[in-house]
Image (spheres, protein in one colour):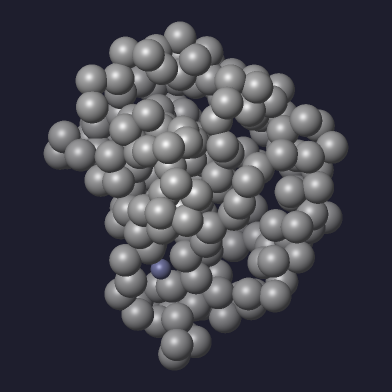
Length: 189
Ligand SMILES: [Mg+2]
Ligand SMILES: [Zn+2]
């Protein structure tokens, strides 16, 4: 079984643009390329899991998102931080595009994208992690059986339920990576 780090996209790896899908607007956040490179060298598969309800809302389509993710993959690859895959949830129950306007099992905080990646890549969730900037990310990771690190951007309040409780709250991406690499062996699951 392999181990992975599941990564939220917007606000975690790249600057959050409101329903943005423009390959020209991709800006990696501080420390991301270096941190991902370190995780890769430690043997983790890097897998992006991102809610993209802009598709259900009709702001962009699957093809445009694929172009953006291809570009983002190239940028990361060029910096020694290549990711293994991008998974996205295109759904939202209040969307305008009928086939995407449904309750699904992949929109975080649901664990569907992570569970699918685990089965497609042979990943052991109990030796895997999720890094994200909101508690919905943490909950998705924990429900799939992974350990969670929250990037504290000052937007999230206290977790209401244990499933939303991060193992660690980091002030920066590199601090999250430091914590992960220093505590990876202490998994109890
Ligand atoms: Mg985010
Ligand atoms: Zn979905």
